[in-house]
Image (tube, rainbow, N blue to C red; front, side):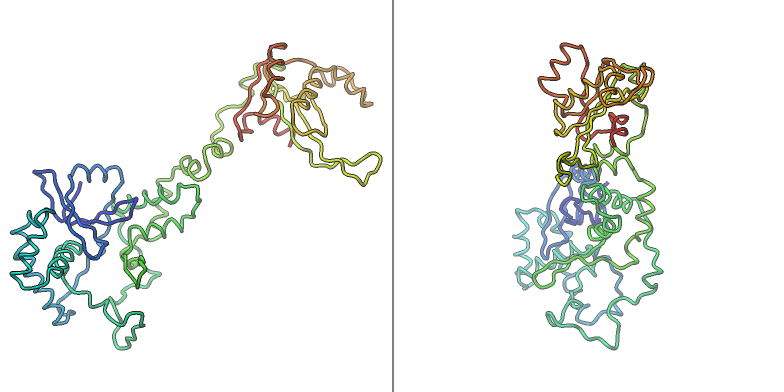
Length: 415
């Protein structure tokens, strides 16, 4: 619900506005931008702003100009200038409000005030702009004498401390009460800065949140800087961390920071296993290739390195038995995969005898063609695979990129 004289901030642009007029009967409101040096009202439909508020496009923030000032601490010049400006506001604001809010008639009203009060037109505009931007109170019209002084010169004050005296030290500050509006600031900052691929730390997110919602924009020379409000006006990091952990969504955080595939590969809940897809041995095989962590040297000159071999492994999903193996110097390719498939269907007794290894049939009882082979999107794609499917009636299933968990058994074997 949009409220009168409340400050809101646009999340995307970080511009802050103040609601200076609400007409519920017409569903209209007026607001001014509090960031600029001279700001005029903008008319907007109330449902439009309320929709943006519900969608977290705008959020309520602390009033940066809310200060309690006693006349005892003001100079005579400050009081006089404030009261002179207040008389103009008191005389024309309520009586000519509709004309001043309307862009068509506003300048004409200002010209009339300038002639009647015998003050420059720019002074009239500055008085109303200051009144709207700074809280629509009498003290909103106080001049900024605290900002006066030599430009670029360091102030040397010895007798009196500038600004409010500190009641609590910085370390003892407990922050402010966390209201619903502040919780929304936490939520927006988390979505905007934490849940991104930039992988910012929570401390960085907290500091960026303070700059967005708990800062005062000042102009120094030609540069604009944001100054964080005092420790008694901002939430502490411990408060932010508490609500962050309380509303933490690990799944969304990992997907936002590391990507969907990273979550599915390393962080998703394990709800089953590959064995569920294999009702028995010989039904589903997994194949994978990897480069071995060894170097092969020449048989003639052992000082010459030939390269690192590529090792193919085929494993039965149900029994975890290795059903085919091949090692060669060629890179992962269809030719290497064919050699592994040839090893898969070969008589293992005869295969081992070629390498002077004697085994019995019961030591390695697997010389079969499976119903399905699971591979990645590499060797098992292309025309050769189509011939394999058409002639042997084998189903080839290729996993998506970067999803080694889809054939985890063979991945474990080759690593």
